Image 1 (cartoon, rainbow, N blue to C red):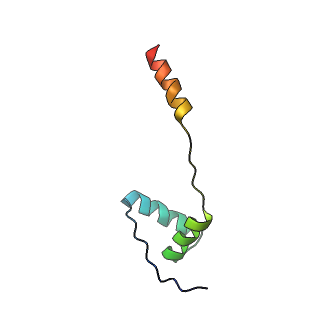
Image 2: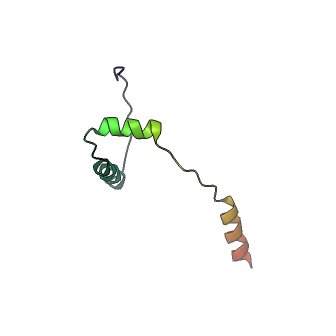
Image 3: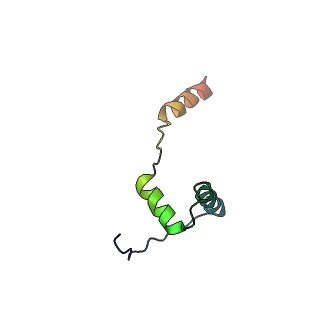
Length: 63
């Protein structure tokens, strides 16, 4: 395994950190750095395009 010698600094809310720790407990992970690295590389993020919904809401408000 290559040596990890670079640092990444992120800011979190208390709620976000609690959610991360809860997720770590679900998978029985003790190493936060390893868990976060694994999730950032192998995890997924969902990007939902809400433009059609916003357009419908806008049209509904106008009527």
